[in-house]
Image 1 (cartoon, rainbow, N blue to C red):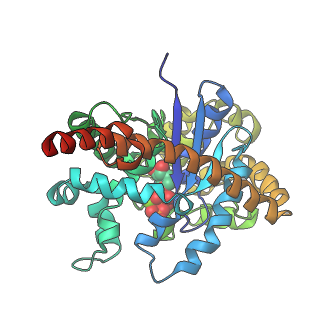
Image 2: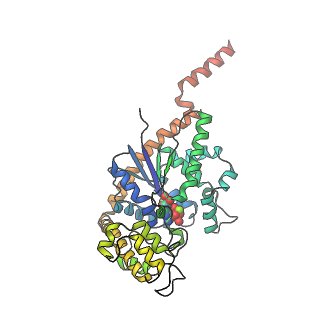
Image 3: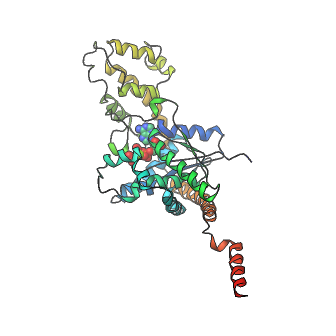
Length: 366
Ligand code: ATP
Ligand code: MG
């Protein structure tokens, strides 16, 4: 039988989802969901992971579960095609995590570059919660519990995927072929790998407060775009401008399509022409920002409208999450039972073990 193609990915409920999530992973998930090429799709809200660095703020995590779920549905994730669930409702994941912990060294975890940056960002220094430090291991549990083959995520997740693959290889080596090695699926468009924040910082991130949220109102989107970081050396319109590290142009790389020029900026044929003019000098930031604003408004309006519709029936959203969590739990329990069997800790459902031991002792007694 051909290996099943299974997608797993998720988001931390530490805030509403932003356009970095959208281009880094969410948009792709919806395309993959609708492609019909995958046998199963699991999408989860990583509340247990969010608690690892928000342990004193459970209300924030609780409130954002529903926000993330609404963002999912607004973007087109469909519970009829994808299992959407809440991480903490699957206790099997904790058990898997604890077994995987024996397969990873402390120094291996310390080398994870994403975790290193996140520790700095959160000023943890010497007070790193153990659960936060080990979250790459619990992420390996999330991925393998659902036998995921494909994990569509942004570039910051690359070290997590590598860690998960190492755990799978080590586990299978010791205990026999049990777990599936997942593949990362990064955005094809380089600008989407790690979308910068509106402040020009390396990553748009809920924790940095430099985001344009998917649910943002039109005037707020415009205000944020107008305040965006561009080229600090481009002071007068006629000064030559830089495209590199210019957030407005990075967002255009991420969102602009050919047809947008006809609709919103007919003086130019394509992005290359617009960039060339900016570099030459004579093109002002405001004009470029207005163009970006038109594009983002067009992209976000239908998402916002669908979100508003879904938010009219909140109990139905919790019901989707509950059903999804039940389905997900059954799958995770199946994997856990295979893991226990492979690790030889399935004492009570292994009838052979009992009769073998019985025989061994009987032969001693005779
Ligand atoms: P937090 O600050 O709480 O970690 P976050 O904004 O980094 O939040 P996550 O929930 O950690 O968001 O990430 C969810 C998914 O979105 C991951 O696949 C991640 O790679 C992707 N992602 C997050 N931020 C970006 C970004 N700026 N560009 C591209 N992808 C992103
Ligand atoms: Mg993150």
